[in-house]
Image (cartoon, rainbow over all chains, first blue to last red; front, top):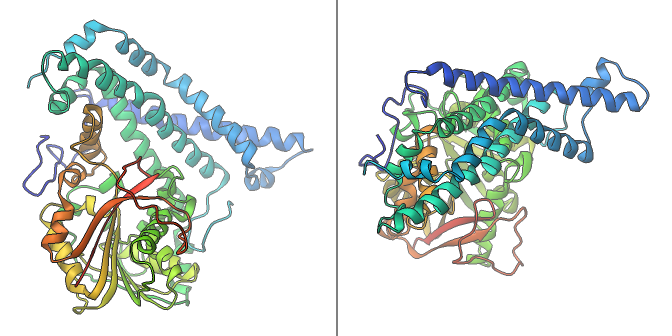
Length: 116
Length: 383
């Protein structure tokens, strides 16, 4: 259902249910949700490791120092670059597939066979 | 703990802050690395091929969306975009729940000014209650009863992540400052004594606006008790005394002619065709003669949107739970304002500012620009 209703609103067929992009394969959607959460945990662990390394370079650390540590602007920028690279590696198969689609006239042709 | 911009902002631990930074990074990757590829595919590869057959990709955006959805890669991108949004709410919710009793204590202890009036009988309108807008679990109206501030804390903490810092960092008040700059540009010399912010959520814009007019009585209305309790305490900790009440902007309980200035900030696209004229008529009723109404909105119009932007808009509407996203971009809101009886109706684009300046050269323009760089501003005067 993609038509606006008389009030100008548009909803999924069953608004009470979550978006399902993989019909009959709900596990695929769940799996991607789990990968997303796992990536977040990896990012958190990498940040924690980075904190340890930076504190070690300053002469030592304990749990309290780790918890209290906040990256300065330079460290934060380095972490963001590092995080983007990690995300890029994890989701590279998707990015590569998109690049392939952009160079595939045959696939593009099938996309144009729309049911107007 | 990280320093916070005001006393109510939930504090993030080392690990929570790392998760928040990552979710912004993931959104950034999906929006800035992958989405441009879909845009290229649709607008630069598919649209010209359709055009060569005399067809218009913009008109066929729904069919194109169905075609794209046949691709596993497209469905994966859709799912990841939803998952990133869900991850944002989940990680913020966890951070808030860890410290909720302390936040509730701070909200109840706060003796600085303002007030909050909730209504246990209040029912939000259909356009806000059918789905959880932006996928925020529980939606704007979520309220667990007297003293609850959870949804306000979740919304406030997530807002800076949602906007990826482009709305003024953790204060999220650029839109409030931009509204005031528009007021200074359009109505130099005027100073309101009473102000109403419709759909104020946690008072991001309301508090910014109040800061420019310290003598004014300022009110904010929204649909959620937990949002409003949090909003009052947040404003108070920032030095503003604001009166919040749980009301529907289509029909409030304020007396005729209560205000000199009625505003809203990115609220109209969360309403409906039916609600828009009602909100405009209500604003007209609430203003004194000479009073000003201003609405700030996303600077997007459906008629000028590319085929990809239309496909993306449909995704936003259906899967980020923004049911009026497309309708609002198609509506002739300026005409609705004229029909409600307003004079001097003006619409255009106001460059976003972090601080409004009464002496600044007016920069209100008819030239559109990207979201967060400019905002669509619509105003009218009650004669």
